[in-house]
Length: 193
Length: 107
Image (cartoon, rainbow over all chains, first blue to last red):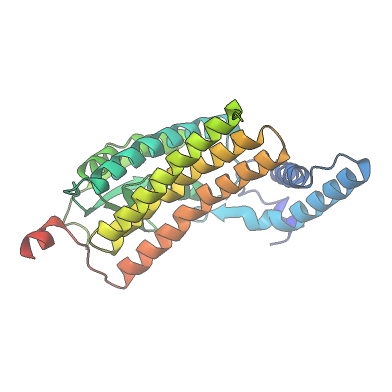
């Protein structure tokens, strides 16, 4: 899809022009941080590069939802909420890390590896990705598979990690982050192969 | 010769990160099967790297190099779970059996 067509596409969530500007600003900020130069000439080159790259790349960063009726821009998130979510995730990662180290370093390992599953319904594909990434990032749980209809198969190392995840706290946080309804159910053992 | 306060904090954080890398290596050797070993690698790639980066940022002070180290850390934080997930998914698709406590009793 060309960017010109994209600007008139009504299936995109949010304003396409705003998405273009956001991408250009992100790219320019990245250029500025990596170059560290404040001369006018370099800033001008950076701004031009960022705008041209954003113009070419912005259609690639659109993700259609499962039934193809809407397209989401992947950077279309509330930055404040996103930062809070990452801080919360960092705290979870630290706690889970300490648990996993305790479980594996003891002379008798306290592990109970198994596959757990749950089903969740989001509309935004970025919500699925964020949840799968967060689960894998937390030590003690690894996302093994995510299907089209939102079935997550997770490999859990310890009892604590499995119960913590099935409690649904993380799923709720991701739903809040993307402004999605929270439709969640635990799939019992034996229902999945 | 005395150490500056930021150097002391940096050394403490680096040693703490080494501990998590070591725990990760121990877990990798001790755990029974492929999937459980993926969890052990998670120790070093999250908290180990986080502490190491934090230590280096504190050693370096607030300048552009610190910002770049934070960017590297964020990149690893985003990209590493994808690698772990792809490994787990490939193992699942190829039918690798999942080790459980029942297997331990049979041994």
